[in-house]
Image: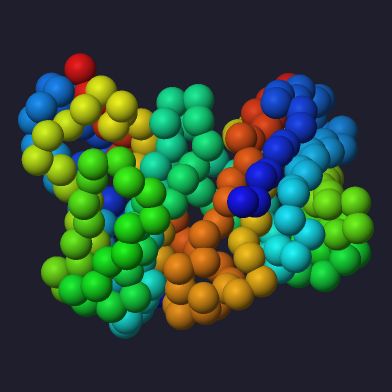
Length: 114
Length: 112
């Protein structure tokens, strides 16, 4: 069974400084990796998805995948206080059929100080 | 544009009472629909999914049930709530095997 762990549990950065979040997974055959964020009491907003080793950029958000090391990271460039939220890593299996289950990590709570 | 609406926004219910949470997706026909649950301090877990009207698959057993009475509607319910049902319930949809899962804004359930 896929296990997804995120680190750190919480992170505080100053506005404008790069924020880096980490996610490790146990099953290297997984295909899809996504980063979501959740503002307090709200639903999930997808930020970036990545399927191949390397980097993928969506605006200020860049995901970096390294399957060999079972690691995917998220880097937030020039974070703003409005980026303060819980960031969730989600992994889904190779067969992305209808029932394919997203396995979420426990999240990283990011606080961006003005 | 597609929209997803969940109701209610929040509920406070007594142990043993019934529950019904709803989710409606507009602007997309025949979406795949999902219920997720997040216990306080816990991780998100997929509970149910549905590919078509009338068909629902259970992923995790939590003494809850789900139904899809219409193409655009997904209902989560139970006749008797447990304390352990407290948490945040999220409905989500995606178009077939497409990559993106779109989430609603959630329902916070407190069982006392």
